[in-house]
Every structure is written in structure tokens, then in C-alpha cells.
Amino acid sequence: MIGIEPRCGGIVLLALALTLAGSAGAAPSFRANKNYPELGLSLRTLGGAVPEPLPPHKTFTYTFTRNGESTRRDLFDPHELWYATQHAGQWRDDDGNRLILGRASRLPPRIESDLQHVARETFEEALAAPGAAFDPDSPDALAAWVAAFAGCTPGAPEKLRTGFSLHDALCFPADAAGDTLIYAFRAKRRTPQGRTEPTEWFCAVVRIADSTPKAKVRKDFETQFLASVAALPQRASPAAGVQGKALRTAPASRDATAVPDHPSRAAARRSIANMKDWWYAESLDYVFLSDIRSSAGKSLVKELQATLPALRAAFARLVPPFQTESDVSVVRIFEDAEAYRQYVGQEHAWSVGLWSPMRRELVILSQGKDRDQTLEIIRHEGFHQYLFYATRMIPNAMWYNEGHACFFESAQIDSKGRVDLPEGGRAAYLIEHLARAAANLPAILHADHAAFYGGTDDQRHLNYATAWGLVYFLRKGAPSQRLSAYAQILPAYLKTLEVTRDPEAATTAAFEGVDLPRFQKAFTEFWEKGRNGARRHDPLAAAR
Image (cartoon, rainbow, N blue to C red):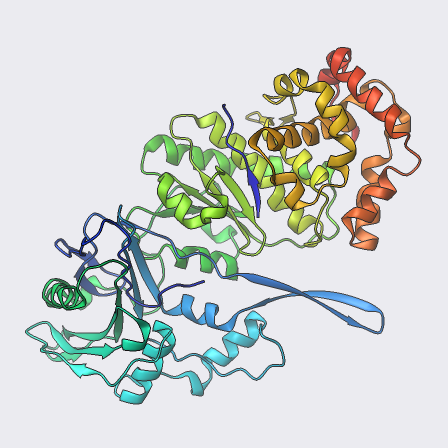
């Protein structure tokens, strides 16, 4: 994960899951009916809950070597891929209780492989094969699906009373899984011809994490949730397999037909299916997902659709890609701070934005009315996202990666797509701590992920400022002062990285022959008295 500091001062449950993590004795309640046309159901979600997106599946990059030639391939956990195809939505309330809804359509495919992970096309072929077909009338198929989806092996199901709206309702005992309840159900659906038929199978898991008696949770779930489930009329339900039709979308900057389809786009849209407050917007290179409800927030996304392509071109001018092919860039913007923290995890709860290489997603916490800070975060993390693809997923040195991300975060893009790269807000901190920053240069050049982000908040601030100041000096300071001895540092870094795939070796090659004490002195003198000339220097024009 590559994160940005705030400035100023796997799949846990599969199916409909409920985790009670709030105050002692707090029980779930299901009180308000809502229609979910994509599911063809009316049901009661968890009271007071907000929709929560499904995190994208992790990507595992393998390097295969044959006859001295190396190739890299993205592989995936087949269970995660399968789970995403069965996932239908999830919700979380203020106490941490969660509902996750799943719909049975295919069994987990059998894939013969010597590796733990598989190619996407291999998985899709196996999922479409006859062996993965799910027979809704087979008790064995249902039991196998429930076991895979719930992550445990429940006992034989108990038939429940179905009432007027349900065709089938089953409770699967799960004593080995602790305080867990597992359900499967089908609703009754009336066809246009007047016949009654069952819907698809849905699975529900209730996991109790506090002292609420299991019997009470079972009673409440069965009397409040199961009793409320009803099939919507067929005319209100979209065709099977359609994803995202209920989502609201911001106006796209290009005609929809100009946006090519891609597995990353489909997965991104699917991750917010059936989430009332989430919507998506797309451009040629990006797909944006957000729960921002204000018109100002949606206007911001529209601006990003128009300006990020120009910024991406600026990235490419200063950091030329090793190859022209690029994946779709997914940008997920949260309005709800707690939802953001839950999504990124405790390890990154301190951040306000991050780029996750494994999940291939840029995740941002909107700064509310502070539009400029939100844009700054997106520009910063957007460079991390670009560099990951531009350098073919090769790890980069922290000084180069974070230094450039900070360098681009203050970029200004006008209505004609022209990009200016001013100092921005980090200069004041750097000047105040200039002696420490100059002394920090040798450590920053060789800092790994843990060293850069670890330590105290003060040390982390200093590391960011030092990396930014170094890149600004190399991009604008040294050229404006005609310090030709440092002109090849950045090109040499990229050239060596492409050949060696080793960021430490690339850094060593970049600074080969550079007298570091003299470099530190030039760095200090520039920040003390050489900034005016640098402000007028345009590195993008120089790179043409």
C-alpha cells in the first residue's frame, strides 16, 4: 500500500453476514423494507446501516523465467474471483454490524493447477464449464454452495415455515463455527402467465460477536428478516446477469461507446451493485466509484474525468512508461470516514488516501468542502497508480515514488489541459526543517517501505518533505541553476530500474559519481536562496 498522510497539524463472511461488534447485548434489527430490483427482491436490510463496497480481489504478480527470458503475469485467487460473482451486496451499521448478501448461480469451479493462483481467463473458462453448473433442485449442490460461500461446513439443514412469500427456507446448523447461524431461502415469484415459481437461492449467515443469546438472534432474524422477504414483480426486475443498472452515474466526459470494456471495469461496477448511495462514472482510462451525494461532489468527479487525462500525460512526459499498454485505473472516493477506515483497514486508518497495488485500486477519503485538498490527494495517489503500471509493476525506491507523488500533488490544470507544477504547500515545512531534511537525504535514498512510513509522525512528515524537496530540486532546481552534474540522476534511475528491476541498484546507479556531501550543500543552498529561478522553470516543456 502507498498512502498519503493527512496534513494539518479476505472475505470474512460469505453470504448475508451479520457481525455484532457493538455494545454488549446489542441485537440486530430488520425494520424497513426496501426494493432491490437487480435481485428481484424486497427485503429488510440491517437497521441504520450504510452500504459497503466489496473490496476488489487481490492480484498476485508472478515472474516466469524460461531460457533466460522473464515474463510477468497477473494471477488471482480462484475463490476470490468466484465469491465476487456470487456477492450481491453488503451493509454496515454504526456498531460494526454487517450484512452481506449472496446469490447462488455457479458452484466453485475445479481448476487443475500446480499454482495456488490462476489466470483470469482460466478461471472464467472453468466457471463456464458444465462442472460448475448449479442445480437449484439438488440438495447436494445447495449444501456444497453454502459450505463454500459461508466458509464452513454446516450440518444438515432444518426446514422452516415459509409463509406466504417464501418458496423454501432452510436453517443450516453451524455449531463448529461458533455463534453462527446460516440460512438459505428462495422467494415465490409470480410469472406474467399467473404461475408461481421459485427465485434463485440466496444464502444468509448471521454471526454473533457479542453476548446476545443465539436463540434471540435466530428468532429476530427469522421473524423480522425472513418473514419480510418477497419477490418483486418480474417487470420490475432486470434481466438476469445485468450489473449496475440501478446505479446512478455521473455524466461521462466521452461517449459511452468510446469506453472499452475491461475486466477491471466490470469488477468495479459489480462491487457497488445494489448499493443505493453509490454510483460510478467512466472515462477512457479511469472508472470512478463514489458514495458522495452532493452536487458539488459529483461535479468534482466530472472535473476529474476532464483533467486526469492531462495529468496522466504529464506523468508520462517526466516518467516515460516502460511499455505502452496500461490497465484501467480504478478510483474509489469515500464520503463516509468510517466506511473509508473499514475499507482500508486498521493499518492504514491514519491515511486519507492510498494506492493498493495488490487490489489495483486508488482509494480516497473525500475532504468534504475542502475541494482542493481532495484533488491534491487524488493527484498524489494517482501518480502512485500511474507509476505502478508505467514501470511494469516493478517496486520503486521510496524517494522516487513518494517524491514524485508529492511533486505532482500541487499540479494545476487549466481549461485547455495545460499543467503547471508549483511548489505547493510542502515548501514551508521543508524550509523550517531544512537542516534536518538535508541531513536526512542519505537515509531517504535507501529507505524501504517500513523505514519511510515507520517511526513517529514527525519523522514521517520529514521523510515526505525530504523526498518532495529532493525531486523538486532535481526537476526544477538543478536545471534552473544549470547544475549539469545532476542532470542524469533521474534518467539513470529509470534506465537502470528497467534493466535490473532493483530499486536499490537503480538508486546506486543514479547517484554514481555524485559527491553526496556536495549534493547536500547544493540542495541546502537552493532551498535557502535559489527558488525564484526554479519557479519559472517548466520541466514539462524541457522534456518535449
